[in-house]
Length: 377
Ligand code: GN1
Ligand code: MG
Image 1 (cartoon, rainbow, N blue to C red):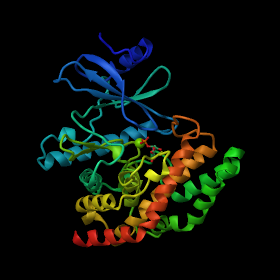
Image 2 (tube, rainbow, N blue to C red; image 1 turned 120 degrees about the vertical axis):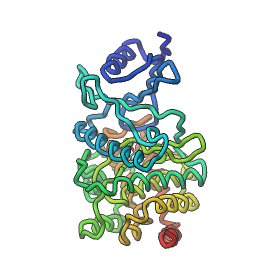
Image 3 (cartoon, rainbow, N blue to C red; image 1 turned 30 degrees about the vertical axis):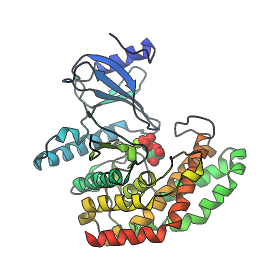
Image 4 (tube, rainbow, N blue to C red; image 1 turned 90 degrees about the vertical axis):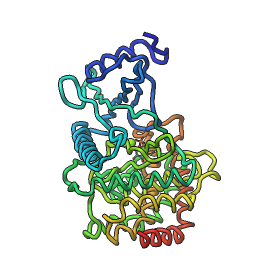
C-alpha cells in the first residue's frame, strides 16, 4: 500500500486497526493529520477512488472530555435532528450540510482501544474550504448565517435534551474563580511576570458578569448552543458559501451569547489568535457588521429583546473569558491547551487582550450596529 511516510509504520498500523472496526468503505491509501484544533488528535483518511468517501478519524481528548459517551450521545441527537430538518426542507446535498458520524461494525459511535483511548469517525465532507482568519466580508457574513441557522434548527429542542460535556464550560463565574485560583497557586514567576495582565482582568470583572446575571434572573433563556463557534469550525463550499458547522463536542445548554460572542472573537480579528505582532490584532468593524447581519438574518426570529440587546457585550465577555482561560493555563504550567512553544499561552492571552481593547474602543459602534440590524429583521 503506497502510504506516505508521515508516521511510523506502527502508528499507521494502529490507525488502520482502529479504522477497520468502523463501517468504512473503499481502500485506504493514506492517513494525514488534519485541522488546527487545540484539543483532539485528528486525521483525514484518504480512500483510493472518488466514489468511496474519505473519513475523519479522531482520538477524543478524554482529559478535556471526561464523559465521551455524553459527547457522542449529544452529537448523535443533534446531527439526526438537523439532518431530518434539512431533508424535510427539500435541500439537496443534505449530507454535506451536517456531520455524519460513522457507526462501528458492531454498533455504537465510539471505540475504546487497548490503551483505553477513545476514537470516533465521521464522513469527510468533500470539496470544502476552511479559514483560520477571515479573508473578506462575504465569508464573514456566510459564517454568521451558518451559526445562526445552526441555532435556529436546534431551537425546537429543549436545552435539557443535551448533556453538559464540560462542566461550567462558559460559566463566567467559574472561569473567574479558576483564574483567581491560578493567581494564588500557579507558578510564582509567571504570576509576577503577568501582573499588568492580571490587573487588567480584575478591573473588568463585574461588567463581564452581567450577561450571566440576566441568565440567572431568567431574562435570557438557556438553549442548545454550539460553544465553539470559531471561524475554522465552519466549512465553506467552492464558492465560499457556508456549508456546514463542525466540531460538535461542546454542543450543550448555554446562551446565544456564548456562540455569537465567541464567533466575533475569531471572525473579526485582523490578526491571529496568538499573534506575536500585537499591531496586527484588532477588531474589524466591517466584519462585525457582516457577521451580525448574517447571524440575525438566520436567527433573529427566535431571539428575545434581552438576548439581542446583549449581543455586542457578548463579544467582549467571550474574548475576556478566553483571556482568563489562556492566562490561567499559563500560570498553571500549560496543562490544558496544546502549546507549540514555551510561552505560547501567554502570547495567546496577550493577543486576545489586544483584541479585547479594540472591541472596547469600538463598543458604541458595535451596539449601534446590533440595534440597527435587529430593527431591520
Ligand atoms: C479550543 O476545539 P478547539 O481546539 O478549536 C477550546 C475552545 C477555545 C479554543 C481557543 C474544548 O477549541 O473553547 O475557544 O480552543 N475548546 C475546548 O482557540 O476547550
Ligand atoms: Mg473544539
